[in-house]
Length: 332
Image (cartoon, rainbow, N blue to C red):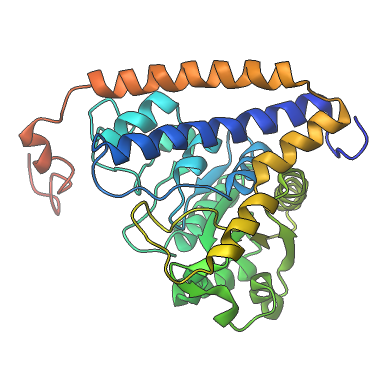
């Protein structure tokens, strides 16, 4: 383990690779969206990469991730959904993990323990509590991890989820990604000093961390998951990050101070910070990083080609999964 790096070299390399993978993939997604290849809206992870990768690396294969907020592509990648399937989903093609019906906001993958985002922000916490209760009742040591943005914590459903998680001492970890903006409303408008304080009245373990430090996220979430596995109940973690891009591609961000925004991009980029840390500590060389980038770019190129070649859904697909049949005990 190198000085100034709290994890072993293999883990550190893995964390950087995953962050680079998210960043380079989203650079490509941004360009494709700008060219009109990807429909709809895209909300990119810039500034959140360390929070997503640290969280994902702390989780086991059997642990559930109930995604929330708007910056989701990095979370899908952190949970292990193949980039080919993510890219095809963004294109609305049948090769996507949801056959093109989920788009950027609503990917789910039950086989990989990814519970998809619902249609409203801040609504994934109650399902996460249900997943944790199911795992507890089955006697497994699996944990549910759920994410939400700072704005989403204003919803009553979030607080209901905390109540039930505390009452049943459930194996669930709530991660609040506070990126300082609820779209265009500053997070400082919210009442607590730290959003993790919402866990205090319910005696839920809570802490606030620097979410732009991937090691701190990894170590903190690992400890929370271990407590949950050992029957010590839920945790609430505020992961403080900086949104280093618009709320969505096309948002002109007229509500942000331009000079301050440029300063934050220089000082708070989680990928740049961790890359420099590993280079300074001698964990990796510039050639090592260049090799990673080349491998990732090849993977992205393959994923884009897969998405482009995947078939469009048939018109009849609009009628699939609308109703569960048979209804109310009726026959086929």
